[in-house]
Length: 382
Image (cartoon, rainbow, N blue to C red; front, side, top):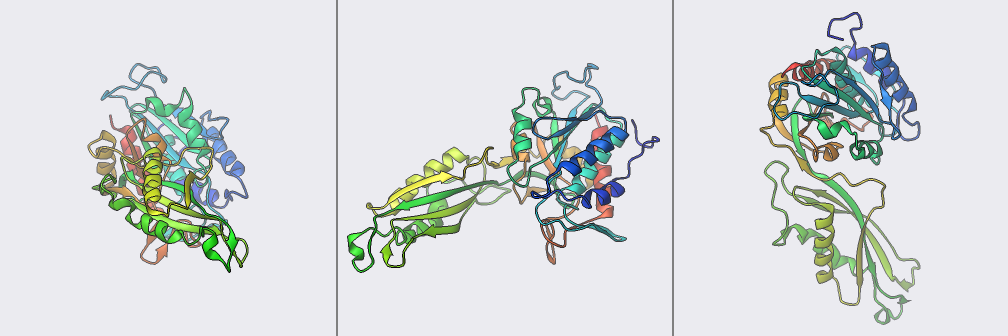
């Protein structure tokens, strides 16, 4: 199927209908996934839905003529994977379309991206193979994306590049911080509050711990400031401790949020944090750390070489700047296997405040069409 055929796709009409379909955690993604699958089928494709709920479809062939042949390295028939997600955050915000913009939950994050990538997938005359891989659970646990990369026949494994749709204002993003979350547990000993010296107050031990968190990235073996992403951050977010108002508390839990930069990983962070805390807290206080339990790996920091072919091609096609993305994305999983960029219409925030995840979420119609045209041009380039 080529652009201009009898099956010409209208990304704006698709987007208006998609935004009208709730797909937040309480509603589930079933209706939205059915709409996507039906759209692909109406345009002559035979999409698959895998066990994790990912929607997969493929067009074009490799240089050998075999759609499943291994990826080339610099050949004239690249394999591009187009990825974004169909789930949204809560609550649902109904679709409202005006002359310049489409508004409502998911309009930019990320149903606007679905519309762009689907349009380019359906309408381009690709130079090589193109795989559309739409995931169901990006906003919560990324179970779909993790299952996708874990498959032995994953399309990511032989991709020459992955384009991940997220609201970047048509800039080409080649890096992003990771996000880890976990809980520091401080253990002391109960006592009567009238005799506090007879116990070990776990809550009082928060003071040196909070100080240690502030100095964590000042240590000699801390990751250096990243040239694009800047410095990692470590933020205490939730405190839970104590039981009775007249009792010395024997335990307190402090949840922390870590935004990492390369080359830090979950493993190196955990070891370094525990070592740093053990030096800071009093000897009588026990200290432990555990990552928040989840069925999928945390989204690690990632970066793609700015000289990668997909970066040059997308910058030339879109006219956007090259910069880091400011939020965690499933690109983290894909970048370990292929050069990966984040690109799309819409913004996380504008001059008036939050856009994505906010009641005023919107995407400009012109930006959807511009992003569509840019991705098409990349797919059609050798």
